[in-house]
Image (cartoon, rainbow, N blue to C red):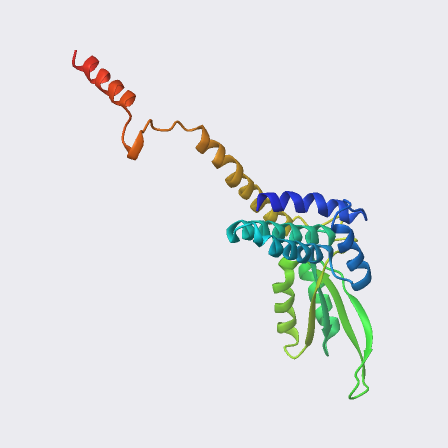
Length: 230
């Protein structure tokens, strides 16, 4: 997992600025341009095919370890390419759009936009409320809509990247996904790197064959008893 994380960070930064490393990622870049499939998914599919063919000389366990590493790196690549900070987009169709927008701006300090719409059935004109919020604010927005208009039609979508006030600058100082993911990565690196080093640095007991103490260890133990009794 640590290898997949580091590989994903490196490749993700390279792909984000339009470059490649000259390997199978060239094929992934072409697939992305022609068919719209993300490079992370394409690279994972290519790695899966290669690993499946390598079973003729690798055992299944080694293949699965490598596949897990490839899966982690593919998700990290997609995360970095998408901008690293996702948000939630609300499109609210309600008979009380002004009240909902005002309540959201008052409670969450999030701006909103009115979009002129027309219903296809009754041909009645109206307004829809468009707003983008932090993932941690989704519950509050849903509660506001439920409070004002329980019959409102709401569409919620994941926004991969957003620019502007409230997101890329002057952002509210709240705990977001970046802080949580950074903390989890720190814990993972600490567990995978620090603990193996400390285990290797611990002195091992001088056991001989069949998990029995060696002769040197017995002699040292007898000398210690003799010194204590004397």
